[in-house]
Amino acid sequence: MNQTISKVFKSKFISNFLLSVILIGLASCGGGSATNSATQNVTTVSTPAGIAEFTTLSLSNLANYAAPVLPAYFDATVIALDNTPANNAVNDKVATLGRVLFYDKRLSINDSISCSSCHQQANGFDDPRRFSQGFLGLEFTTAHAMRLGNIRYYQPGSMFWDKRANSVEAQASQPIQHAVEMGFVPGVGGIPALITKMNASSYYPDLFAFAFGDAAITELRIQQALAQFERAMVSYNSKWDTAYAQVFAPNANNRGLGTVLPGFTAQEDRGRQLFIAGPNNGGAGCAACHQPPTFALVANSRSNGLDAGETIVFKAPSLKNIALSKAFMHDGRFDSLEKVVEHYNSGVKLGPALDNRLSPNGQPLRLNLSTEDKAALIAFMNTLTDTTLTNDPKFADPFKK
Image (cartoon, rainbow, N blue to C red; front, side):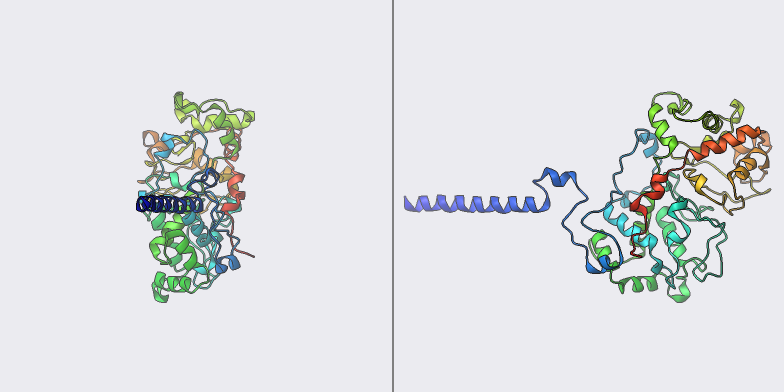
């Protein structure tokens, strides 16, 4: 009898002990707390001293990169355009590392240039200069820096004006290894030399361990982190976005893009009509290539006839925040939107790479827009300015000044 009682007691004791351990474990990892699950970016992770010394980051309170609350018109039609690979979906930890990499001048050979030197947040992640200055301060790039907003919605995902990189990831480390831009060329050790430099820093081993689970720094991980940060730059807070959200209808003709937009001036709405409608319907046909709501270039677009006989098929960035740019086209040849509009109005030239939408009947397109209509198109493009993106702290420089 006593032995039986003893066995029961021991059994209950062990069961209660194990239950207590499980409950404590659940509480410590948030498994039993509705509050913790609602604030998924808040953790008990402490910020290592090296990271805290040089940056303003708090690893226990990460910015939300992975799950922004997007408008309803970012539906399956738009999601289908997302060029994010299955093995590099945006998550807050890796994107936070990407933010540091994006702003860190130590990624250049002489600590003088970062990605943000040429892709400046205040300018829509564009460079206000026609060409960007290299790490030595003596040479300049031969192409204008592209805006980065909505980079994730460009299909098929190839990057640079000439599409030489097949993904955002492949693009990410090329400027680092460029002889003019950031200087880690093979002659000075290339990416391995950069990784040695990063391993010696007081913050990168901890940041990579935080983001990836271990402290190994590799070119692939650098590419993945930068790509995640850049893909998180989704624009959806312009005047156009606010208005379109009120009329969007997924089953309506052209998803409601032809609807008069509330809050638009008569000039802005005339510009919207010109942008959406094709030349055969009294418009300029811009939306055929620069597709709303992301205004990223469609996959089958070709070149825009800047030069006669052009053979290179150039891409273009999203038109979101285009009004913040100071130079336009792959070589920055135009310094105003007025000149850009005039090119499409009267300046398109024939060549093997020309988009067929710009060469109806084998001849260069001539829109013959009035002065008023050209001004209306520019007024519409100004409604694509998203100052939320250009002022969002989670995309700003994380380094202490």
